[in-house]
Length: 142
Picture (cartoon, rainbow, N blue to C red):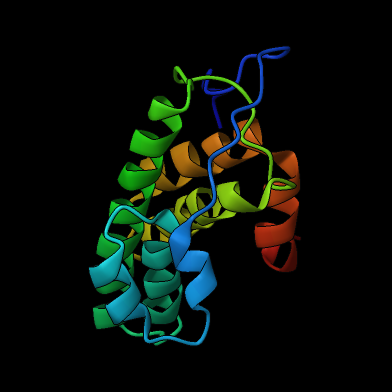
């Protein structure tokens, strides 16, 4: 896999503000996404649930939900100073929605045979937060 320059070594970390969707644990994720459509976390949860269906409909829905969460996360990162490179640490809880959306997008892309997208998302996740990659992909590694 070719290295893509998403996170330049030594660049500053981007820390997102609190995500209001995080406080709605236990609420129907469809309602959370409707209430907070800018929340990467809401879309990531929807993507993870769809991918858990383990069928073609779930793969396609998961891809769409994850792509929405990914783009909402990119918007939030840019609003908070990220310029296409730099760390997005897993250790900062509000960053996890974006990172989960990236991993869900990678999984969905792989499921539908979009290998280049899978590799790009994995590289983005590794470059943004090696810890996120270990936490999210760890069980599927090896």
